[in-house]
Length: 225
Image (cartoon, rainbow, N blue to C red; front, side, top):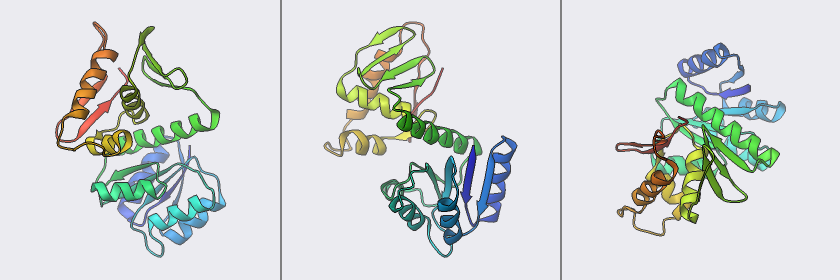
């Protein structure tokens, strides 16, 4: 991939750019928002890694300017501000994903792969999402695993689609509440836990390894197995 890294912290930029190049990716590196915006608009990149706190022009302003120009390049936001409100602000500004600092390089790569894969699906009109042996058909709204058809309710379908589009990433209950239920129930209830439990019972057949992990104190993660 050809990537654009807009990050003013030298240590973080060195760490990320070196790791990307070691994996064979091309990486343009910019240290401020004004030049970063110009680089993003002036060249084609597969994805942009964008720090939120930048000199001259902050990351959210860069992101809004990109989207206002019609640029749909996938953007992964980086920030030391990792509260829910901060993540929501980044996503609503047009970000495709949000990674709080400090982070592992492995997670950064996984999130980059996920947002570029989602964008590729959008461009090609791909009607299916696949994670390991699990397939979700967006037109028929039917899931299958290992040739076994899985019937899903509407909420189960939405839940599974969200988890599959965030493969390998921890998805919090707050993220699921906003994306699927739109805050139409009290966050103190166990509605999400009940739906995840039902979804597990459907996608994990006899002698099949579980695909959805509960991350204690954080949320859930779906992995290819």
